[in-house]
Length: 262
Image 1: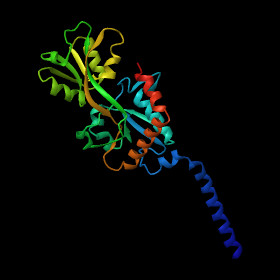
Image 2 (image 1 turned 90 degrees about the horizontal axis):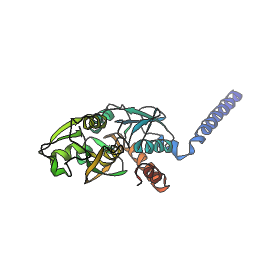
Image 3 (image 1 turned 180 degrees about the horizontal axis):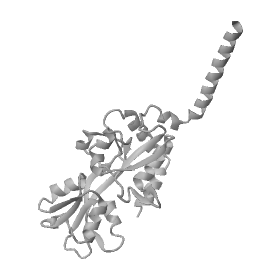
Image 4 (image 1 turned 60 degrees about the vertical axis):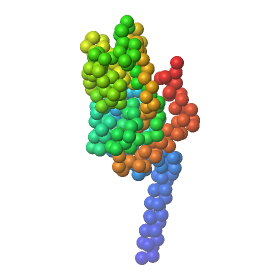
């Protein structure tokens, strides 16, 4: 009887040692950070994004890249997680619908932090300061937002650019599109006279020389990564910790410069 008890104790000790050994590899801050986050898929950070929206998110050589995506890769790695990306519509993102349905853990899609959105979303710390802008064909008579009266102006539905255009250019005819891809195709085809949206995205459309920025519009906007309004407190804290680390170690600036340096 004593020998059986001793054997049992020995087995329990061995089991505890084995568990301790398994846990030993998780002594890094990444694994500790990943625990208790209530992720959609264990071991992965599932990111939803409205793609394409260069330079923030787009597909290149079969992979998702861009400023947001590169930051997400670093954040996931810092949390010792794999990165999984899903392409979704922006409306479902900014409304909180896809997060509420647990389709993903976090949204990374150039989402401007607003009080209205805070009612349905939890935001990370700001990670990008943005401007709005007006894109027009070269030679256009549109030189400022005051010239948009009576013009067809492409905007992306559900965005702060659409809201800004409605407020600041009330006499313009706003044409709403689901994404930048359709907006850009419309101005290329001459179906709209201008596009009003985030400056970095419009700048990308000037590269072929056919279009130019008529006006930059300072709006004091900042982007944040978005998470579910309730139940994501630990995830928000973990993402903010990773953002701080990326700023402190210079990796954030390195990624920023690769997309926005003059």
